[in-house]
Length: 132
Image (cartoon, rainbow, N blue to C red):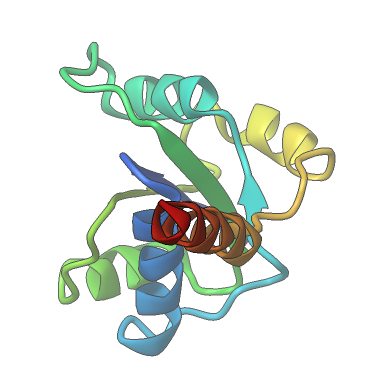
């Protein structure tokens, strides 16, 4: 049975670290590359899964399709402590079919590219400061 892990966090670095943790420590099998999703959509998915309004909104989000059985993924998730909020969405959730349809059109998650740009900006700021 196919399921999804929706990851919500306040930074893309935390989302990236969580994706690594799911593989490394949770030993979850990804069915393909992680995809970026809008924070609002991730918040909407979580709200529909837990059936109540959210207290906090996220700033960065991703989703990955899993080849791990949902109950096994949930069990593994309880044993690791990723730096982001993760929710497993399976066919038992009402939002599942919508997520399946939207998953294919989502862009790939590129946290490293964002971090490289950020690091280059820091280097440029340091070079400019050194000139004064």
